Length: 328
Image (cartoon, rainbow, N blue to C red; front, side):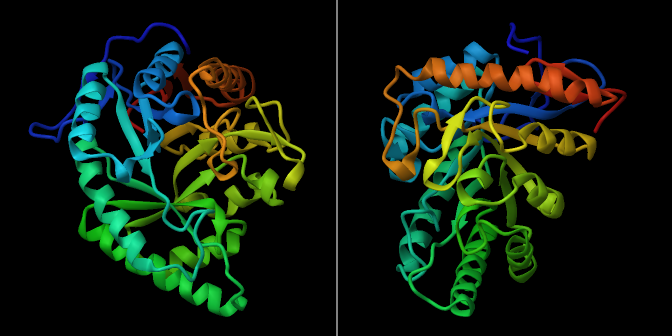
């Protein structure tokens, strides 16, 4: 799955925005699961991020920062140049990571800051040809559980309304915040906000540092999961150490098999945390590309050895997996 890219067919509708290109291998079956990664996990600069993807034969990039700057802060002319580079390289943007509700924020912070960031990301998402924005649900700041819940739901409702008006989908990650570590709360969030502009992002490795079984969580929330992050870890809590996919205790193979068994379709985005961990102030320095590539190759090996042998009707294709026998 890391070899040369096969010939592809462009299925982009006429007049689609720059960067919003849909490519698939030739044949009758559409690619159902595509592999990609969060670029700054490999390198701080865009060329380094794209080189890492190229080594893996992947064509999806999730953007968080470029040259150390969050996407929402990049000047529009810089974003346009990024979009042109990605289009020339045949790379699709799977989504944008925001700071909305994340580990650096608190439930009592000014919401206007997040609404401003979402507006900035809406413009940049259109230029980059994506409609997906990663969010979280705000760490507490000494409020009661009931008040924390109420405020989190109010905020995500307003954000989802704003996102929907801009043609965006918010992807809530099981990480920091009110709904992060509980399947029950994630289901409460989705039901309470009740908007097609809010879906879930399942990070397969976050259960290890946050103290829950990610596989069991996935089984409960899978119907609402629109995007997946791939990581693995050992230890737990403050003792967490991130390892190559398949080498940890996150039950990664079980989670991925479960998704394949259900015929799930979407992106598996590599976020190995081997060099880059924003919540700990760690960032790749360009020398970490090999770590990202090693993690990507470990994912490919995991899929080949632990997923595909038990997944009837699926096969590996350049850059992902597809279901054989027709359109998924």
